[in-house]
Length: 334
Ligand SMILES: Cc1cc2nc3c(=O)[nH]c(=O)nc-3n(C[C@H](O)[C@H](O)[C@H](O)COP(=O)(O)O)c2cc1C
Image (cartoon, rainbow, N blue to C red):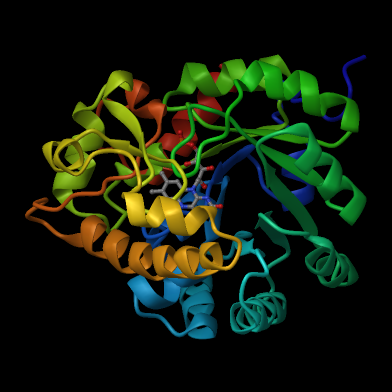
């Protein structure tokens, strides 16, 4: 008898589908700046779950937070989730995140994905409302920390992921995190239906994709960015420290080649200092928020920081988000 954490191929019922109240164990991960309401809603409406990235919703796509959630609700009645980046580096940011989580709960969101920091306060609030919290991790020690804080599942971010990739493979993460006894979601490197089926067969309770969902008509990213994803191969993905100070997976465009991949000497020196590292991180956070917004929407593609993971290998065309969810679902049951 297989463990209930794992997918039953014919029905696709997993711990993730039960916890999130969805039909297909497929998450459209939070993406700054690419998570726009129409994309989130399209994935949820097709039976997966789209995750709202609050800074993307408000700063990039111009919605007041509550109004943005209500707009998504008008596009779909199915469950949507929210990403809470809970690094407590600034008190103002923390207060803003607490407010966003509170509003999301009031607006009926019951599935949350936390990243960084200690997710205990999110778990307390979300569990009190009958919801579930999954926590992004790149290795076992963060998984243990999440489990101690009460999370219901872990998103295992592997080394092929877009955004801030982890150091380990999907196989290693499954082995390391499996003994914690929580449902595991595979994040990174899944670009096509056979990869999705393989992850479920390996024992993952679901898959979180980012890059694949950028190359969709619903995503508001520029046409040149989407086309670059379609044309890129696995070897075109490099890790750049120049955007946030820690490695981020990007397409190796001529602009990236000109800029180099390492942080500059002043930034490196500041990141090493005990006091200066906090300033440097704040400078990076503000700079990257602005820079990534511009890069994702700029149709000229002249100064392009195009984030994408190694899943580009399986992405060959721009395809509606709902069609992707359906195709992946059919690949499991077919
Ligand atoms: C453009 C882009 C932006 C991302 N931004 C975030 C983010 O704001 N918060 C987060 O938790 N993960 C972020 N991620 C990670 C995704 O949620 C997801 O885990 C990852 O994309 C999975 O790998 P894949 O791109 O190979 O599918 C981002 C990924 C991409 C590609």
